[in-house]
Image 1 (cartoon, one colour):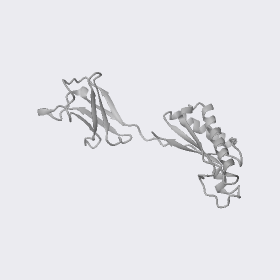
Image 2: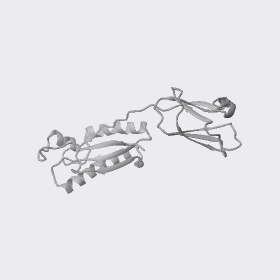
Image 3: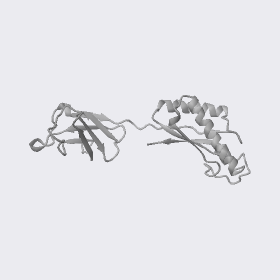
Image 4: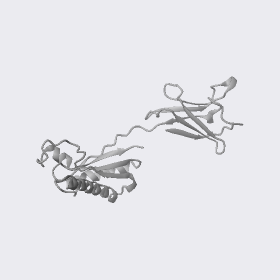
Amino acid sequence: MSVTKKLTANFSGPMPKGSFVVTGPDQKPLKGAVTYNEDNKTVTFASDLPFAPDTTYTAAITNTGDRAGVAMNGSCVWSFTTAPVVLIELDDTHFAHDSSALTPLGETIMDENIRTLKANPKLRVLVAGYTSASGTAEYNQGLSERRATTVKDYFVNGGIAPNRLDKVGYGETRPSYYEINPFDIESRAAQNNRAVLFTIIVK
Protein backbone atom coordinates (compact mmCIF):
# COMPACT_ATOMS: atom_id res chain seq x y z
CA MET A 1 0.00 0.00 0.00
CA SER A 2 1.27 3.49 -0.78
CA VAL A 3 0.25 7.07 -0.19
CA THR A 4 0.75 9.94 -2.64
CA LYS A 5 0.62 13.68 -2.01
CA LYS A 6 1.05 16.68 -4.31
CA LEU A 7 3.54 19.13 -2.85
CA THR A 8 4.33 22.81 -3.00
CA ALA A 9 7.94 22.13 -2.07
CA ASN A 10 10.58 22.31 -4.78
CA PHE A 11 13.97 20.67 -4.82
CA SER A 12 16.93 21.63 -6.98
CA GLY A 13 17.67 17.94 -7.42
CA PRO A 14 16.38 14.60 -6.15
CA MET A 15 14.70 14.80 -2.78
CA PRO A 16 17.38 14.38 -0.11
CA LYS A 17 17.42 10.92 1.44
CA GLY A 18 15.76 10.85 4.83
CA SER A 19 13.80 14.06 4.23
CA PHE A 20 10.45 12.28 4.06
CA VAL A 21 9.11 10.62 7.21
CA VAL A 22 5.86 8.79 7.91
CA THR A 23 5.01 8.03 11.53
CA GLY A 24 2.22 6.06 13.17
CA PRO A 25 0.40 6.71 16.45
CA ASP A 26 3.50 5.66 18.37
CA GLN A 27 5.50 8.39 16.56
CA LYS A 28 7.98 5.82 15.27
CA PRO A 29 9.04 6.29 11.63
CA LEU A 30 7.83 3.66 9.17
CA LYS A 31 10.28 1.97 6.86
CA GLY A 32 9.53 2.19 3.17
CA ALA A 33 10.49 3.49 -0.27
CA VAL A 34 10.09 7.15 -1.22
CA THR A 35 9.88 8.42 -4.79
CA TYR A 36 9.59 12.03 -5.92
CA ASN A 37 8.28 13.07 -9.34
CA GLU A 38 9.83 16.39 -10.30
CA ASP A 39 7.43 16.86 -13.24
CA ASN A 40 4.18 16.85 -11.29
CA LYS A 41 5.66 17.59 -7.85
CA THR A 42 4.32 14.48 -6.17
CA VAL A 43 5.95 12.33 -3.55
CA THR A 44 4.96 8.71 -3.02
CA PHE A 45 5.71 6.57 0.01
CA ALA A 46 5.36 2.78 -0.23
CA SER A 47 5.49 1.18 3.20
CA ASP A 48 7.52 -2.00 3.69
CA LEU A 49 4.68 -3.35 5.82
CA PRO A 50 0.91 -2.92 5.28
CA PHE A 51 -0.64 0.09 6.97
CA ALA A 52 -2.78 -0.86 9.96
CA PRO A 53 -6.53 -0.45 9.43
CA ASP A 54 -8.42 2.47 10.94
CA THR A 55 -5.17 4.17 11.97
CA THR A 56 -3.99 7.76 11.57
CA TYR A 57 -0.50 8.36 10.22
CA THR A 58 1.43 11.60 9.87
CA ALA A 59 3.68 12.32 6.90
CA ALA A 60 6.19 15.18 6.75
CA ILE A 61 8.91 16.47 4.48
CA THR A 62 11.70 17.65 6.72
CA ASN A 63 14.83 19.71 6.34
CA THR A 64 18.28 18.20 6.18
CA GLY A 65 21.58 19.49 7.46
CA ASP A 66 21.47 21.80 10.49
CA ARG A 67 17.67 21.63 10.69
CA ALA A 68 17.38 17.90 10.03
CA GLY A 69 14.07 16.48 11.13
CA VAL A 70 12.24 19.83 11.24
CA ALA A 71 9.30 20.13 8.86
CA MET A 72 9.94 22.47 5.94
CA ASN A 73 6.56 24.21 6.31
CA GLY A 74 2.93 23.54 7.08
CA SER A 75 2.07 22.42 3.56
CA CYS A 76 4.66 19.66 3.89
CA VAL A 77 2.95 17.99 6.85
CA TRP A 78 -0.29 16.08 6.57
CA SER A 79 -2.18 13.22 8.16
CA PHE A 80 -4.16 10.39 6.64
CA THR A 81 -6.34 7.71 8.19
CA THR A 82 -6.59 4.22 6.75
CA ALA A 83 -9.96 2.57 6.21
CA PRO A 84 -11.35 0.27 8.88
CA VAL A 85 -11.58 -3.47 8.32
CA VAL A 86 -14.99 -4.50 7.04
CA LEU A 87 -16.09 -8.08 7.67
CA ILE A 88 -17.83 -9.40 4.57
CA GLU A 89 -19.95 -12.53 4.84
CA LEU A 90 -21.81 -14.15 1.98
CA ASP A 91 -24.27 -16.90 2.88
CA ASP A 92 -23.98 -20.25 1.10
CA THR A 93 -26.73 -21.26 -1.30
CA HIS A 94 -28.12 -24.81 -1.23
CA PHE A 95 -30.03 -26.84 -3.81
CA ALA A 96 -32.43 -29.77 -3.92
CA HIS A 97 -31.02 -33.18 -4.80
CA ASP A 98 -29.99 -33.46 -8.47
CA SER A 99 -31.03 -29.85 -9.16
CA SER A 100 -29.24 -26.72 -10.31
CA ALA A 101 -32.27 -24.48 -9.73
CA LEU A 102 -32.27 -22.10 -6.81
CA THR A 103 -34.84 -22.81 -4.13
CA PRO A 104 -37.01 -19.90 -2.86
CA LEU A 105 -34.75 -19.75 0.20
CA GLY A 106 -31.73 -19.76 -2.09
CA GLU A 107 -33.11 -16.76 -4.00
CA THR A 108 -33.67 -14.90 -0.72
CA ILE A 109 -30.08 -15.62 0.30
CA MET A 110 -28.80 -14.51 -3.11
CA ASP A 111 -30.74 -11.23 -2.92
CA GLU A 112 -28.99 -10.46 0.36
CA ASN A 113 -25.62 -11.42 -1.14
CA ILE A 114 -26.25 -9.04 -4.05
CA ARG A 115 -26.94 -6.21 -1.61
CA THR A 116 -23.66 -7.03 0.15
CA LEU A 117 -21.67 -6.93 -3.08
CA LYS A 118 -23.29 -3.69 -4.20
CA ALA A 119 -22.34 -2.12 -0.88
CA ASN A 120 -18.74 -3.28 -1.40
CA PRO A 121 -18.05 -2.61 -5.10
CA LYS A 122 -14.33 -3.48 -4.94
CA LEU A 123 -14.90 -7.07 -3.86
CA ARG A 124 -14.48 -10.00 -6.22
CA VAL A 125 -15.97 -13.42 -5.49
CA LEU A 126 -15.21 -17.01 -6.39
CA VAL A 127 -18.45 -18.96 -6.93
CA ALA A 128 -17.73 -22.65 -6.29
CA GLY A 129 -20.26 -25.37 -7.06
CA TYR A 130 -20.38 -28.69 -5.18
CA THR A 131 -22.43 -31.89 -5.22
CA SER A 132 -23.13 -34.78 -2.92
CA ALA A 133 -21.24 -38.04 -3.51
CA SER A 134 -24.09 -40.04 -5.08
CA GLY A 135 -23.97 -40.36 -8.86
CA THR A 136 -21.07 -40.71 -11.27
CA ALA A 137 -18.05 -38.44 -11.09
CA GLU A 138 -18.71 -37.15 -14.62
CA TYR A 139 -22.34 -36.31 -13.89
CA ASN A 140 -21.52 -34.64 -10.59
CA GLN A 141 -18.84 -32.51 -12.22
CA GLY A 142 -21.38 -31.19 -14.71
CA LEU A 143 -23.98 -30.64 -11.98
CA SER A 144 -21.54 -28.64 -9.84
CA GLU A 145 -20.66 -26.46 -12.84
CA ARG A 146 -24.36 -25.88 -13.62
CA ARG A 147 -24.97 -24.83 -10.02
CA ALA A 148 -22.08 -22.37 -10.14
CA THR A 149 -23.41 -20.98 -13.43
CA THR A 150 -26.91 -20.56 -11.98
CA VAL A 151 -25.54 -18.53 -9.08
CA LYS A 152 -23.22 -16.44 -11.22
CA ASP A 153 -26.06 -15.64 -13.63
CA TYR A 154 -28.27 -14.65 -10.70
CA PHE A 155 -25.56 -12.25 -9.51
CA VAL A 156 -25.20 -10.75 -12.99
CA ASN A 157 -28.96 -10.39 -13.45
CA GLY A 158 -29.01 -8.66 -10.08
CA GLY A 159 -26.56 -6.00 -11.27
CA ILE A 160 -23.17 -7.43 -10.31
CA ALA A 161 -20.54 -6.99 -13.03
CA PRO A 162 -19.37 -10.33 -14.51
CA ASN A 163 -15.71 -9.37 -14.11
CA ARG A 164 -16.21 -9.43 -10.34
CA LEU A 165 -17.18 -13.09 -10.43
CA ASP A 166 -15.11 -16.22 -11.03
CA LYS A 167 -16.74 -19.64 -11.01
CA VAL A 168 -15.64 -23.23 -10.70
CA GLY A 169 -17.31 -26.61 -10.30
CA TYR A 170 -15.66 -29.08 -7.95
CA GLY A 171 -18.04 -32.00 -8.46
CA GLU A 172 -17.31 -34.72 -5.96
CA THR A 173 -13.54 -34.26 -6.19
CA ARG A 174 -13.38 -31.71 -3.41
CA PRO A 175 -16.41 -32.02 -1.12
CA SER A 176 -16.97 -29.40 1.51
CA TYR A 177 -18.19 -32.14 3.88
CA TYR A 178 -17.04 -35.76 4.07
CA GLU A 179 -19.88 -38.24 3.43
CA ILE A 180 -19.53 -41.51 5.36
CA ASN A 181 -22.22 -43.20 3.26
CA PRO A 182 -22.38 -41.85 -0.31
CA PHE A 183 -25.69 -43.65 -0.88
CA ASP A 184 -27.46 -41.73 1.89
CA ILE A 185 -28.59 -38.72 -0.14
CA GLU A 186 -30.35 -37.11 2.83
CA SER A 187 -27.47 -37.22 5.29
CA ARG A 188 -26.43 -33.90 6.78
CA ALA A 189 -23.13 -34.03 4.87
CA ALA A 190 -24.87 -34.80 1.55
CA GLN A 191 -27.28 -31.89 2.04
CA ASN A 192 -24.41 -29.54 2.86
CA ASN A 193 -22.54 -30.63 -0.27
CA ARG A 194 -25.48 -29.70 -2.52
CA ALA A 195 -24.33 -26.12 -2.45
CA VAL A 196 -22.49 -23.20 -3.91
CA LEU A 197 -19.92 -21.69 -1.57
CA PHE A 198 -18.40 -18.23 -1.84
CA THR A 199 -14.83 -17.06 -1.36
CA ILE A 200 -13.81 -13.39 -1.29
CA ILE A 201 -10.94 -12.82 -3.73
CA VAL A 202 -8.35 -10.43 -2.36
CA LYS A 203 -5.73 -8.92 -4.68
